[in-house]
Length: 521
Ligand code: G4P
Image 1: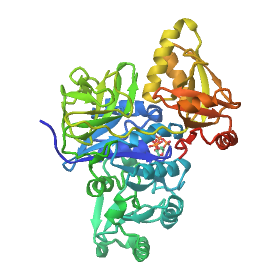
Image 2: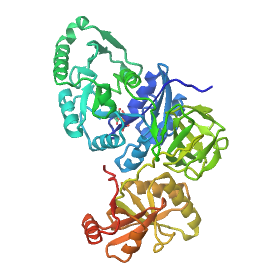
Image 3: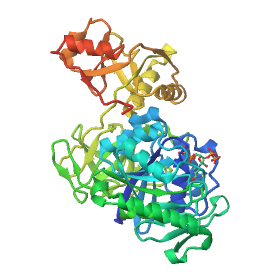
Image 4: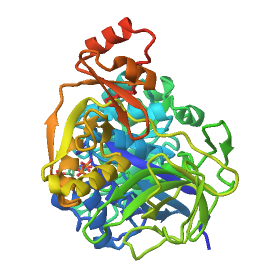
C-alpha cells in the first residue's frame, strides 16, 4: 500500500566544500537509515555527485537514486534531492530546484558568503523557494555569528532569523541556545563524529560553570537579536522574506538532528501547483508529475535513460497509464518502471513530493508534464542565457550516426543547449553553455558513452538573444550576428558582444530581440 506519511522534499545547496556531502551523510545518519558515518569518507568517491550517491548506497544499503535520497524521520518521509555542486551547472541546479519545496543553504562559517552561495540564494528567490540557512563548520575558527547575520542581511537581502545561537565562538563550539525555549543544547564531542553526537538539553540554571561565560555571551546576543526583531515568523519565511538560521558542525554531527526537526516543523510540504493555463493542481487531485531531469549512462551497470519526475499530485502506481501533456499521447508506466536506487528496486507507489524515475521513456524531456484525469501542463523550466559557444563535429565521419544520437541525447538531458542552422547543417551544430565545464561533460560522454569523440571549436559569440522566425529572416546577412534554432523551436541570435546586440536592437526596433535569464543570475 501507498505510504501516505507527510513529505518534506528539499535540496541541500552550497558553495563547493561547504559540507554538502558531509551534511547529507549526517542527515541520513540521524534519520537512523544508516548506523555509522565515516566509512564513506573518501573524497575520491565523493567528487562526482553521481558516484557520491552510488557509493553511499553501496556502502549503506540505503534507498538512493542519483537524483534523490529517501528516508523516514519521525513519521515523515524525507526526499533529499541532489543538486550539482559547480556553478557551471547552474542551469541544472535551477531545474532541480523546481522539484523541491524548500532548500537548506550551507554556509561555511570560516568563509562566509561565497560566490556560489550568493547565486544559489538568488535562484531560490527567483523560484520562490523558502531557504533555511545552516552555518556549518562551527567547530573551526571563523567569522563571528553576528557578522555572518549582517552579511546575509546586506548581501542577500534576506532577514536572518536565528532559531539557534552558538554557545562558544567558532572553533569553540559548546552547543547552541535554542532561542524559542531558552534552553542550552549542549554537545559532547565524539571521536571523529563517528556516531550520533550526544546532545543534552539543559535549562539555563543547569548550565555548567565551565560554560557560564560563553553561555552569558550567547544569552546577551540572543536578547540583542530579539530587540532587533530577528525572531522567526513563519509567514515571512514562506514568503521568502526571511531565512531561519541555525549553527552546526556536520562533521561532528552537531545540529543535524535540529535541522531535521526544523524541516518537519517549518519547511512546507507539497502545495498546490499552477498550470500554464492558470488551473491549479492540488496535491490530493489526480496524479500528475513533471520531469526535472533526464539522465542516461549514470553508471556502467545501468545504461538506461531515466527521466526523473516529481510527483505534484495524486498517487502514482506502477503500471498506471498516464498522459504525456506535450503530445497528448498515453504512455504505460508498466514498461517504464519507476525505480529507486539500483535497478532491482522499483517503486510501486509514490506520493506528492516523491521523485520517480521513468526508465527508457524516450518521449519524456525536461520540463514535460504527465498526468491522469483532467489535463494539466506545468510551466516549462526556463533555460538560461548561454555565454559560451562551440561548433561541434564528429572526429570520425564514419561515426556520424553515433554522433547524432549522442548530441540528441545530451540535448534532451539539457547538458548543453544544441543550436542548429541550415547554413551549418546537422553535421556541425553549435553547442551553447552557461558554464564551460558543460563542454567537458559533452566531450567525455560523447567519447565514452556514445563512442563518437568530438571536435569542438570555439566561436566568438558571447551574447544570445531570443528572436522569432521573422527576426531570423531579417537578421540573415547582418554583420556580427548569427541566428540559430534550438530544438524547442525557439530562435537565438548570437552576438560577439553586448554592444553589438544593443546596437542591432536599437537599429531594428521592429525585430524581436529578447534577453534571456542570465545564467549567473
Ligand atoms: P561539499 O560536498 O559541499 O563539497 O563538501 P564536503 O562535504 O565534501 O566537505 C568539504 C570538506 O569540509 C571536507 O574536508 C569535510 O570533511 C569538511 N567539513 C564538512 N563539514 C565540516 C564541519 O562541520 N567541520 C569541519 N571542520 N569540516 C567539515 P576534506 O578534508 O576536503 O575531505 P575529507 O578528507 O575530510 O573527506
